[in-house]
Length: 442
Ligand code: NAP
Image (cartoon, rainbow, N blue to C red; front, side, top):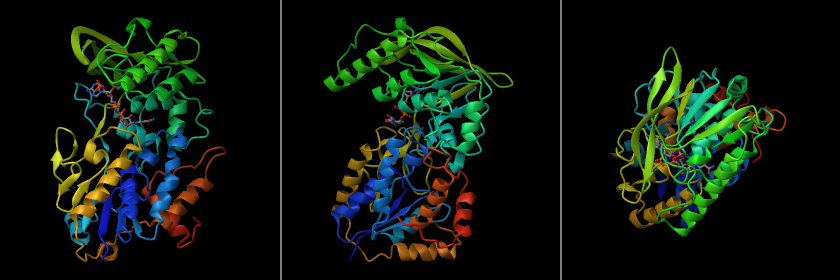
């Protein structure tokens, strides 16, 4: 009797779990249940649109989705179209691969005012995520403050300052491209509450800042320490030294070399967003970093800017029936086990850290755990799910349907670009209704 597994969420962690389950068993049946009509989660809607090579993993995920023992149910929202308890009744095991799609709150005065955007929303907007396609940020400003010193913050800064030509081979959403490229942005401040050594940028992303057509990185040499101090692994020390060397090279650049600047501001903790009719600036407290910890010094200064984007990490939203670890913003779990027959993988399990490949280990582990824990009980799986969804009038999207949506996006791509994204669910469904059943070759 095959084990029936439902994986909720068809992003990287969901796909790695599906692939591991396929490999670990000759007869396991796996259904991926995804809220959007489109698969691939953060690969499509999180990875920067100008980092197309990172998105190549979609090809492997597509092969998994098209394996005979795998089903894809897109446009099916957990808690709206099907309850978690229902899934747990239909399947032997349910794996939550729902990620951490909400912004960690900035939690300073003024942060709830218009003109302040979280990276989940802002990145979702420029990547054509249907939940954020109407964000319509007001980018009519010369200066933007991006809070955070991680790769998401640096992605946001880069996308804001690259030229249309530099973005031509990307899949930046068309509405976002129009808004960003019409914006009079000249300065992007990248704000780190700790120092340059503590910044979490990977060196590839940091170095890219020095190679932009119309933008120069600006670093105050006085903010750079002479060496990487403190106790850490050799690997960490090498990575930090590399970033420091890159920042030293940036500090030698001339701020007026190019039309735009990304200004690195270290040791500055946001304390208030200054608002009038719109955002006027960001108030910061200078910090002193001691043993890796940022301590406020009491010195306050302001950065003038018309938009604030906070890229300070993510958390999961409440999910009915799922115990939450509030402190971590994750599913409460013990090494991925949540409750009998219920598991978590990826950012839902670990929090928002690590790259795409980090999810592979979670997938391998959950496949082992399911093999150890679960004796298949003849649960009906996908057929019963389809009957339930049909009874509720839910229009689910199969993987073959997605291939037709994808083909429409590819056919509409501007020259040099991989696709022109459809950003509204209704437009995706319309593609399917326009050409019902047309087979697309895989
Ligand atoms: P991250 O790497 O954890 O960076 C978050 C940043 O926000 C840190 O600099 C953190 O500072 C700062 N921060 C947190 N709370 C703050 C607050 N209240 N005020 C000011 N600053 C605050 O997270 P991320 O950038 O969201 O990225 C998530 C994961 O995805 C990371 O593992 C990242 O490497 C990965 N990612 C990778 C790529 C890529 O490989 N190209 C692209 C995007 C994302 P502290 O260090 O002081 O806490």
